[in-house]
Amino acid sequence: MSTKTSTTPWLELDASPVQRIVPPSPSQRFEGVDFAGCGNILAIATSDANTILLYRRRPDGRFEDVPYQTIGAGAQIEYPHDVSFSRATGDALLAVAQRPGRITLHARNDADGHYSTAASAEIGGARSGLAYSDAVAFVPPDESHLASCSLERGTVSFFRRTSAAPPAFDATPVFQLKHRSIYHPDGLAFSGCGRWLAVANHGKQTVAIFRRDDARSAAGALAFHRRPVAVIADPRFRYPHSVAFTPQTNHLLVTNAGANYLCAYAPVRRWFGRTGWSQELVAQVLVHDDAAFREVNTADKMEGGPKGIAIHRDALAVCSPQIGVKIYSFREGWR
Image (cartoon, rainbow, N blue to C red):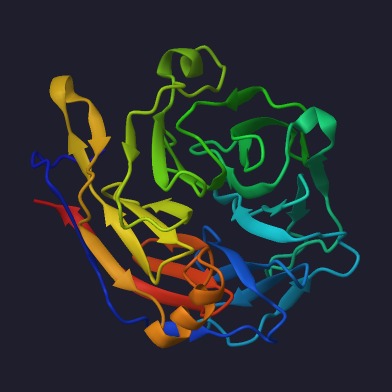
């Protein structure tokens, strides 16, 4: 816990990326991205090609230009939209959200970062309540649960881990979050402490933030309050796609599939010590050549902009079919 007495968070985002990774082929549309907890592996979901690409960090700090492993053939992956590493267990699992309503989990099978090509476990079927499952994330801090949102049903479902070895999860969610502020959810993210959940509402041009129910969690039942602590409705939003919290100050970063930028919002203190998030933009970064963005966006107002987003320490990865992956540096702290 921080010992600082100041309460004003600040964030600086570099305007230029430190690295760009282009797709191996035009058919591999980058949709989702995540850093392993160790920071040395980058996983990317390529929707149309039905593959997951894994990249390794080089000794100079940059990631290799070509993947060291491709998960696809034999894995029965169909339109993967998001990926998530189980950081609390040393990156032992990689979860893949697949749009038809299925999550597969792939176990690391050696110390060099290779993962099983066939699913080590999976969640799906009628009991799961998943439909258009566009995002997935392990729930911090202990990651005893996995969360996924259903764009079609407007829900966030939580699945309990029942076994670590072999990995297994309940087929039926132990908790399902549903509220009128959640509409066509396309992305979700948890703060590092696990207290805050942000949901990007593709169909409502908003981001809703929910707080964990401490009383129920203390009793051993995972739950979030159904009423959001904040709903960000910035008119700059254009089909919010993915969200991420920064590790120190909990600034919230939002990508826009229909705009050529990502946005950042600061946490704020409200009455009686309650936490919320500002409606005012505190940072914005253009992520692609504007002419190239407009060529795509003119044909489809929901495309052309940044999609997947991931953070590891002071590194920010943003991906899309048009840009591949761009990695930025950022700084944060308290005044």
